[in-house]
Length: 307
Image: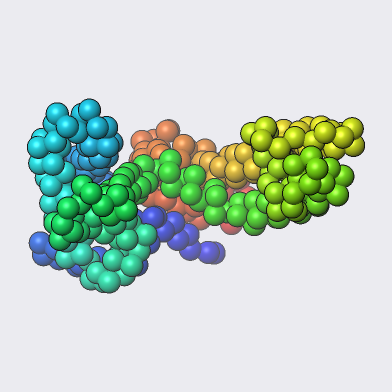
């Protein structure tokens, strides 16, 4: 008889990675910031989502000259408000975990720093309005929108599908690169510099724009053979657009099916619960993430027989 082990959730993995405090105010703060299964944590996530979207809107409005000239003071005040708010949030995240350096080096930790650092740098750079290159640093605040990915489960599903499909996509992109390099070289030999194909890299650039159905039109074949090759590449372009979409979609479908089939009620053994279900569809018992029913109930679920 095998013992069924509960599935380790993403929250448990994050707690093991960052180090969740056992008790005290740091444990309570961790529950609010990193866990959304409580009322306080859910409210915190929603408030932070609104703050992220509002801060990005402020950055975008500040880039519009007509709006910035009229509401410069208000936009500046709002920017400092959001910067201080996200700074406090970042410090709170570091304080409430046992391994703050690990969070600081993580993807979201780096995004947190990038999103708040330009505002502080602007204080120490004189005449910022005249330094175009330095002003570009302020646009890094748009990276705040990347923080959305840690609060929406759909982003996590998409990220997991891309990770699981990375080898297939890499093989596909490698095949595309070989095709465009080969056909671009052929086009260079067929058309030549007299028709605008002055080098192999330029011919490969034309092959990429043609294969992806962009077709800027700055370079075009003039010979019949070149037009025939271009026609083939245009038709191939439709397949190029469809293949990666199919790979990722299939992986997302497989993840959804695996998530549904793995949700089994520990009380009655009912299967086929949705991935986001918290309670059993038959007996309303809480679903605790078991991948199979207890051994005492498996015979009943499977229709009898020894276990």
